[in-house]
Length: 507
Ligand SMILES: Cc1cc2nc3c(=O)[nH]c(=O)nc-3n(C[C@H](O)[C@H](O)[C@H](O)COP(=O)(O)OP(=O)(O)OC[C@H]3O[C@@H](n4cnc5c(N)ncnc54)[C@H](O)[C@@H]3O)c2cc1C
Image (cartoon, rainbow, N blue to C red; front, side, top):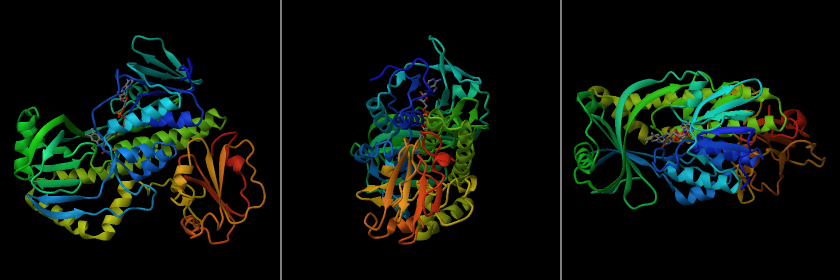
């Protein structure tokens, strides 16, 4: 393992899923980085549970999805119940992806996989190093740490979670609003008196109680219980097996036995988005830039995709691309967080309803929506984050055949691999459709070229998904984060202009 460079091009604050994904993307791009983590050892609490399809696609380019697929299970669906009666089963319509599910794996498990992969790439997370502040200047940034010397870096990524010291020292405001709900959280081994799907929810008069099956151990469940009313009436009692049993009895159904309690916590809901994602040579990513409740399992996924977006841009700049390339980090990622926060807020309000009439209306809406295949398809696509597009902020994105510049590059098979397994943070990918006898001018560009002729695409599916007619000569340039950068017909042109000097593709 190579020693940490004294002045790394990039320093990452925080070794959560966001920080480690950024580090892995940079390591794969050949950019040395240091990762500072205030915890003295890896975390064990399980917070986030679900990896969505889009995160799996970008993680595929980092070489970690095989291990994730072994450790996780694929969520099949969840139900809303009243007592022991199923009111509605929320179906999942698998979207077009090599990873068309939600992959249930507690956050600590994912962090372990990322940490091992990082170590294999030569990057060791530096545990027990707490950052107290960051300063930025024209030439780079200085990071202050507890009990040690300041560290200089060309760029700093603040991936230090919702109470980010990086964000505070940049004086970037994150106007978060307490939304007033309190939830008990527990990981518990339960004996159930009835078979349940992977997820189950009871929407009673005191708010929701949700169960989600966890991988690894038989009968291990994550329990979420809205205890806002109890808290408003006085002090919340400590959550132990007896309290949990009583709440499950009263709010779910009688006869659930708590065999063991592995982890408990109380979660208070907050919503907010940082005013800015960057000051000078310092960027924010993940929970440092956005906070919201875990309904829909989106937060960690947003962080992973922030990380990949920031990392390929920084890698390109360090390889020689213009710093302007970084501007689109915020203009692309902040609106995505804004939209997710709006969606989570809708769910939060629906779950928080107390008025009996309003609750009855909501339950009817959920029951009707749950029976509609169209709604299930739309919900699955939204939850998977596969529909995220930057086309309205990308040159060439407003017209022409679909998919357009800024859109996610669609999934298609290339031999026995998905294109998403062949895209990667260290290079752009040029897809060539039809006959291209002339050599591709790739000098000075970090580019992988894949030819998709009739031999490689016998059923024509890749052509169809990329909006190319059979036999047509076309090209599509895919950015290192799996979004389309540019496309055209005939021989590819302007690749160096698009890709920048010896760097992955930029715009
Ligand atoms: C109960 C619960 C359930 C959730 N469920 C889901 C889910 O199913 N799906 C989903 O997508 N999201 C979920 N989330 C949200 C998810 O946990 C977060 O979005 C995710 O952890 C964000 O990752 P991050 O790396 O940005 O931040 P964090 O995971 O918070 O990591 C930040 C890291 O920075 C370190 N750090 C902090 N300050 C410093 C400092 N000054 N110096 C050095 N290091 C520092 C911390 O120790 C930590 O390791 C859930 C959250 C909760 C609380």
